Length: 260
Image 1 (cartoon, rainbow, N blue to C red):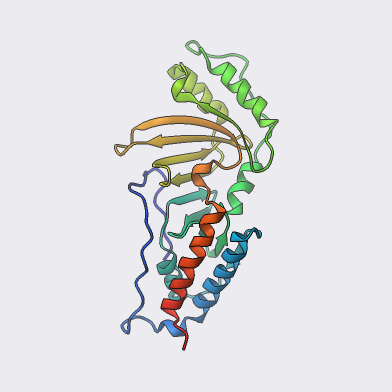
Image 2 (image 1 turned 30 degrees about the vertical axis):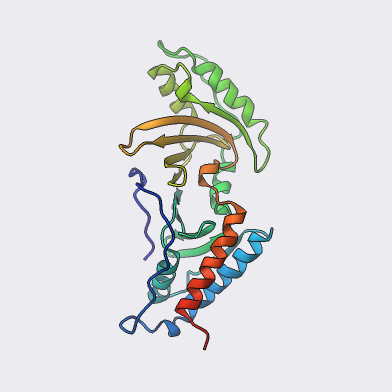
């Protein structure tokens, strides 16, 4: 069944695509799993349309039984990006731009640069930042950073990144960083990405504000950035990659359900 790594654990290595294991005679007769075949065919059609400039699309698979869901999991695998959005768990397939979503008994497939639930969660948060007027002793440079973030929040346009603040290069004291973390808060949205190394993206409790942290192989943070704008690029699938994903998906469907 569909699984997602625990959020505190940073993933290691980079996923690469391999042809999936094709079911054998010892497995459930794949030919009988028409629900999985229909869902993957719908996903393929949606991916083709998206790659040519069409909209994102969602395919509901909540009604499929365990055998059909297992085959879908085998076909899609686990790719570079995974996320927790409230109670919804999101896993990108090994084919970029194809996503698997689960929230309790509700399950779906989605095509797009990032599932719509991620953007919805980010844009549903407060549009203003409550900057503290009294800062604790030891705070030196956090005030202008917070003002810059608040100003950038008012300028964000859909699909764009308005501001990027590299905290690693700023002379921030531990008190500054604590005030920043407390002021930005967390919005119940976490994304892990291996496409740009080990990267954890945390949606802050303010609209379109993200904390983007990069880690080395020892899980030591090497870059700490605040972004204001659309979902950070480290989590997004490029439209041109979805075209390649569709080609791969078609190969897999043909391998599991060869034309008679």
